[in-house]
Image 1 (tube, rainbow over the protein chains, first blue to last red):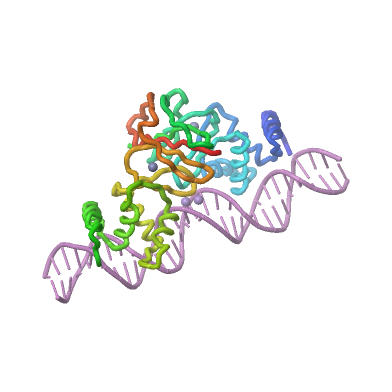
Image 2 (cartoon, each protein chain N blue to C red):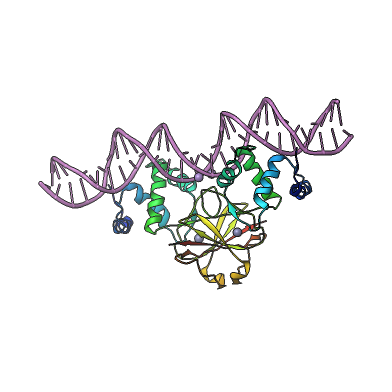
Length: 139
Length: 139
DNA sequence: ATGTAGTTTATAATAATTCTAAACTAGAAA
DNA sequence: TTTCTAGTTTAGAATTATTATAAACTACAT
Ligand SMILES: [Mn+2]
Ligand SMILES: [Mn+2]
Ligand SMILES: [Zn+2]
Ligand SMILES: [Zn+2]
């Protein structure tokens, strides 16, 4: 397997999560993380982007497996928006979102842009896992 | 069709939304709204409850159709929680929720129990459709 | 170099939901 | 009251997203 220069960091990263640096995972890493800005995607869009060229094909099953593995490893975050499809975010910092019901697209809201000045105590024995707000917008 | 006394209000209600008061819709109305407390449900749980007795059977397709019609008419509210299943709420007032990832159950949080002291302006041409918070909890 | 656990893959299975089209019915109009 | 029709119900098929299966492949420890 050929490992290009900028792949070395992904090899490290994957190994540190007990994930073998396969060529499929490295390709997906490069697509997801070799960029200046974070972004949101679905498995469907990721699959298209990864497989639009005629080079190495990655199966849909592997796209699902990899997204799941990267989410578990903390490289990605899942954003719950619609009932029908999972959205993922390469921005793993805690932050909020606008979800446009027309275009079905997510936009980041910086964590500091929403201030929750009063938050209820969770039921006994339960703790808050996530307190990120999704604001639904439309025309 | 036999219309019991307390069904008359549902007949009115349905007619006012241009929905014919069929026996299926009235049965579902009674199940959903003839009670002191509001509650949360999925199509799956509603279907079981409506069809557990040996009286009139309502098809699953009609359960789906009716839940959709009632949501459009404003009798029910859809709560987005998990990626796999839709949740509905007979409490149509604006309020927030805890969503327990273990038991997969929703609990109401009164609107006043969360204070959003800072909220971002939506993108140009878009308006906020819904600003209800779902707080994910777990053990 | 070899062995093996981890990974990829095509494909099948599942689960929730939506679609289809035929049979049925509420209620307006005759 | 009967007739007519648009609205509704229904069983079953189709669709969509996702997960499971199991055989082939491969990274990498020994
Ligand atoms: Mn679905
Ligand atoms: Mn699904
Ligand atoms: Zn984001
Ligand atoms: Zn509620």
